[in-house]
Length: 415
Image (cartoon, rainbow, N blue to C red; front, side, top):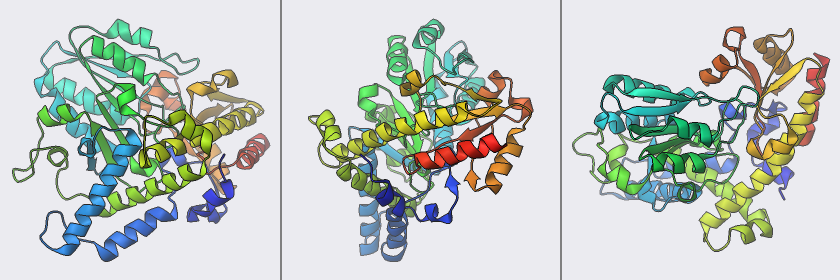
């Protein structure tokens, strides 16, 4: 359903000749992003709230960007979207605010599968308040955790459950909706890190039944910008650390200082690109989603559904390519029958080879891959790989091709 030639033509960086598989660290951007940024800086570059035309125009761009992100995430209203420098900074701010009411003996549940941006902010907040941290472990055999195990950790003292929608380390897609249901039954809030899932499939915060979600535009084909979604009633009543002149209503109370308005414009460009893709992705996705969404929201959901379907093919191809390499061990879900529970992010080790040496050699051959722990240090520690350099990570997205994956397989076999 995807026209790969037309898609790749929109990404100037793909013309370098390299095979771009470092996407989990940050995707490339289409021309719509740079066009929006340049247009903003050249035509509407002004600060917020002025009485003159360029300030009005700047505010209009930000408002449109906020509304587009709300559509992308399935938010009830644009005021539920707050921008910041990155997901980590926004999560630290929210952890500081939510933990103000915690007391010694209260509990927080974290997972060992998450990026540390959804771990350390809560660890530090718990330490400040004397709260207890309880850990949801994952099965090292396939790097998955279960809602059943989560339920065993919950109690009337649980204040917050922090989970990731998808693992940036091993690609596992987690049961966020199930975790939210269990947490709410225990009276706890749910904070979701969707940074790694956002470029791979549709997000609907209402359908998932969660309370907060954070992601980053530079992971879904946009510029460096952090995004926080929260239920409006929670954003409204949770204490916000802000300057006195800032408005008390969401989202202003959560957007500290002057924002990167050009990055908001670039994020709007990324969503315009996804809208273009959604318009071209065909009828079946529209029919599957019709009745709930209208206009841009429907088109964005159609785009992400098309991406999700195409990337299932990439996962199968990558799984097959890695399985054919002698001495290579995939960490995470490796059974093709279970690939619906993963995104096409695969991490592996090779017998007798240090991950950095593999990444360097692949880099010399024109393949951009990552190595180490990717800030998901809990994963490499749990797998016993942190001291030996972690893993090699290969992360295709929808602008990658099966041919690129086959070439990677050949390069790995030659090692």
